[in-house]
Length: 555
Image (tube, rainbow, N blue to C red; front, side, top):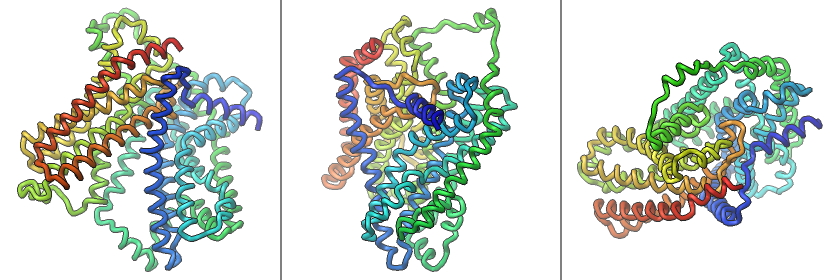
């Protein structure tokens, strides 16, 4: 137990984001954290709470009041399973501390459970908060006593354990077979491909629900069709026990819940005892990277201009590092699948043919709606891909490299900005152009959409870079830790959501609905607004952005 607590404390400390001692930077960072809470976390929690409350109220008369709560728990469990995969895989097998820990007299169970606990604490803060909010709505909707909540407190805190155990066991099995590859980088790339495949499969399966109707589904459920919940209860049996405990103060369900979690953890730890060290020792002890002789290496060296060389370096880091590729690049590739998912669920009546007809008839002023979508997507996607908001965090312990190379801060900022611009702009507009052509959009409108997209992406990237310059996460031992617990991405997302909300609300409700302003006038105003916003942040970066980097070097 002593080893477990000590190791867990160390792993948690390594994951946490370092603090900036500069008062000015600390003040700005705290303000941005408040914005993140207000414009990302609170709205998300509020929507979930409303969903659970309304579902519970509507179904309690037919004794299916727990459906909304269960459904949210299933969704949380599925997302926990998918998104904890890269975290657990990296922490158990690819973190740099493994080679230092292996020679110590530490049992495999102690090491594995400590790393698992650290991952659980870091990854499930939002999930646990979401569960608490859903339970609050559920208790209020049924007018339950809050003693119900106190009884099920241990369940609230440990509900995501089983999904993470599933992920950990899969990682253990994969790495037990992958040890024969003998190349850590190759295994990382294979795991990255697997993560992308899981994400695509998840969105593909959900998007296939073209004719899904919630009201019809609830009616079928009331008539006895419980197939979905029957399957999910087999996969995540702890959720049904959790719902019974909080609804009925069922102590037996609570005991069964604890025993079930213990059983799953026990199976994982038994597997770890016999297979973890076998999987990780060969992986950590072998340096399988190919080493070129110095003559061949010198022949392959090419001279480039500083800006071009720095841009090349940024591209290589993003595309060749599996963790950065999965977290920063993949979203630019799979966003059309997410868009398809939203279309299949929300906008089932509007296909390509319908949009063509609306464009020809100019019904509902479809160009304004498309402008709204282009603007929102171009603001939010660059914030989601975190390329700009981790520009300096990705430097890590090599941050001083920025100071000593013969390249000005201006050129280094420019290189990072251009890389994030190119990836985001191509990622959005490559797929958008195909869509424009399919619906028959005219070339002038397409060019206007390109301009709006370019300026929107630019503003988001400038904001993200400036936020990351205030307090970059420089202390990390592997690439996943550079992104994990990095609040700059969430802050950038909060600011982007704030700007997106103001711009899109003004565009649609004020300019289009109230004034009925023509499309070309609305587009011109949007372009002007983003030009001003870009100029404003360019001035801010010139005045204090470079200073932020210098202050980081000094501390």
